[in-house]
Length: 417
Image 1 (tube, one colour):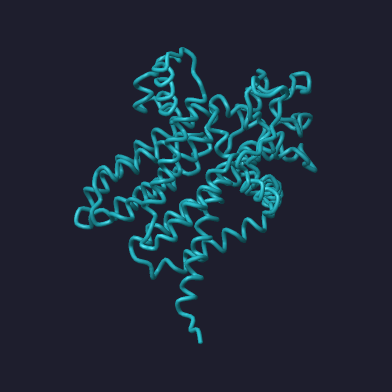
Image 2 (cartoon, rainbow, N blue to C red):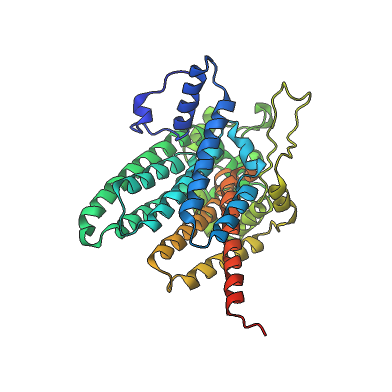
């Protein structure tokens, strides 16, 4: 309940975008006479933001065909309001802010698609603010930074053909602010959490099940004697490590001081077979949003349990019946993107922007897919695929609406006796 620094609220010191709903929740707690922060109040704030974001998407993404908007609303209620998504709202994890930020950014682009010829400064400001909320939610959103920048440049390019030079200068200012904020936030997080994640990436990722860990360490520019820690993650008791315990002086000097994510990515590029093997493991952990974290208060249950079944109809189906295989995931994205690419050339400007938004959402998911394994090995893979699963669900809704529209068009053109 400590006061929030104004320079952090303004983004001068880049801070997680969770600071904004948390500040609102703090204020509500104080108004209610409480001196203790209550995550249930935060869950209420998140819920209002999320419902508003989804409502705006359905409203601005709607067409003259009300039946399609109705289908989008029903599917959003069933899929995007799944209990395994909403249960995170009552926490201080970044997952809720991540999906809320993404939906708000999507809403801002849909709003732009409806006002291509009459965009206002408020419309552009909404795009900017929602991008900050999304990119600042979790460090793993850093992979979406270039995608957000491209979308913002695209929005400004649409605004007014007669004033391209002046508008692109304004766009450049926004891009610089977004890059400053996102990289500043990422570097702060990486300075602390990066120590553990790099350890997991190498010892619990590259070296786990490696046929020749000494060779792999040499490729990474590390001492071969670190092979003794192969298969270990950063959260074991200190006695479990032979020599290189996380955060120890020797590990910080000989491992963290010499390793970087660029070296890890380079290793996988030089060993594509190992990368595919890692992606197959990642695929096996996909479509699982039911984590092993507790879901209840200690006052509500006698024993700890991670089991949860409140409005989890969709996530249960997804986890049990969708093939969590790399080939299926690749096939799904190929089909989805092919359908949009075919329709893009003949689409009107408004619909082109919406197709580009679909590409943006798909690209966010594609970039998120390898990140858990590359950046954290086999530690918490299913949890770190949270945004991938969410974007996958959005694409399922979009694909379902497209199939419905195809069947309607087919029925219209079919001649009945």
